[in-house]
Amino acid sequence: MTVKHLYLVRHCQAHGQEVSASLTEAGFQQAEKLVSFFEGKKIDRILSSPFRRALQTAEPLAAARGLEVERDDRLAERVMSGTDMADWKDKLKETFADFTLSFDGGESNESGMKRVSSMLGDLLSAEEGHIVLVSHGNLSALLLRYFEESYGYDHMMKMSNPDVFHIELNDEETKICRIWS
Image (cartoon, rainbow, N blue to C red; front, side, top):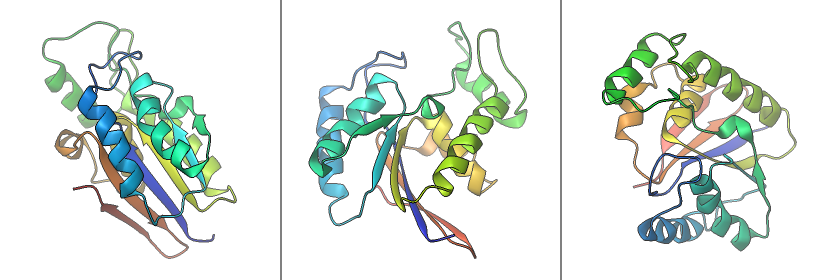
């Protein structure tokens, strides 16, 4: 395998968690800051969750690079439940203790990991070596966990909006580094 560089971006500040939730004014400004943040870094492709806030995070960078944003459903946030739960943080933590746990109308972390694994299998065999992935907190934690099992609930709860991780892969090792500050 040649060296691969994946840049995992958690979307910028948004008005909510719904699929249609838009970025806030601050979020749009953060998306513009990502353009300068990635200056000097090679980018071959940009893939995004189909959720509006993720697409709005990816679009300025794609426009600046003359690239299309590729929507990939496998980057969509894991929906924990079909109904609102007052104790959602406790329930979310439980899903990291038991990856098979799912709630009514929701998806388990195990299912989310299968999406991550499918997408990464495609990307790791692709010709392009520098790929930006725009997603969400829970799915980002699962993607990082794919490479390093220690990533989980606590890491996810410490992520910012936006956040950026550089994942460098080669035949010998995988390096993960949080590069947003």
